[in-house]
Image 1 (cartoon, rainbow, N blue to C red):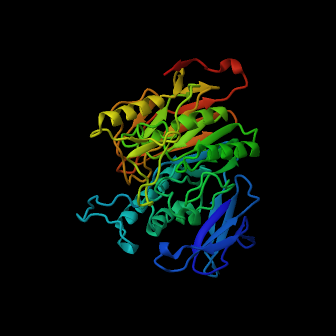
Image 2: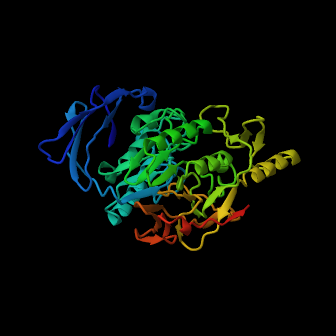
Image 3: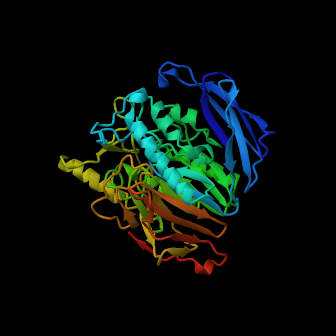
Length: 461
């Protein structure tokens, strides 16, 4: 279990951890300076420590050293390591609700310090979601976030991180975060989140790819803000070699290469689809967890069409502090493809149409109902915003690869249960009164010993 936190004194990288509150074992790690431009010119230090030897279904206590003193003890409960339950969330994006009217008729602002009322508002909503979800699912092992934990792309955002990390449940549960486009372009993500097995591939300023094993699953987290798919392939190869016998291989990425939101799914979200689809097929990936689109969708079981397709990427804009959201770039020809063709020339429209056709690079496995046995295809899940800080409309036309989609303008989350033989996912939304209701049927992938039960009829698109 990895720990990360800030302090104002050097050499605070110490965690005291154990089953007996009076006999905690000391674990040491490393500290480093936080760039002062992120913290109002005040020097902070990040602390990263790994604790080992945890047992399943056990209550632990821990303190960390902060500013030369031990913090008050906190509790940490492990759950079963056989059947693992995860809370899957998308795009908390704390700090993005600026401009929305509040009860006092004031608009939320994304300013510095205490004036960042947008971060305060979204942190409150994020905390509410975690409290409701985890109170109703007390046996969750850990949280998977599909990225965009915070909002202010390319700029200091410690107020947003503070609101995100202040959620009360986070002191007692681990989280595996993904680098989203709003997290990607500054080093502060890497100060706060101490990810395991970092491969050094897929790097942006925030960090890169990593992986871990938990129970029957191998989990691979790719920083798809880096468009070098050859590096992501190296990460997957390293991850698979670390646990070749894992029953399940699950990838998390931020950009939803198969999603259904109006803003991203038919434009920048699918930029890496032609490259990642065959890569995931080749490595027997079972499920891909996605964010970015601020809508909910569950695909049919998909696999590549086996044809040759172009390669595309996104690039930074002229400021270097954000991405050029207006164009996709063909890696081989360097052609800039205009994504919004509402005021485009005939040539620009033709280039976008060719790009769309090239991204029809998948086949759909013929599956009946909400339970599938030994599929050859991959399930792609896109999470809506867990905090409700920002939502997008659904794409005008539901894509043929989408089985179910939803946008009810409410925070949502999914609960994943993983055993040797089954992957099950349920998705819920939180109503204004705090009650919870399902927005999709339970979906299950079963793995059996009999290959005869495989559903393998495909239909070319």
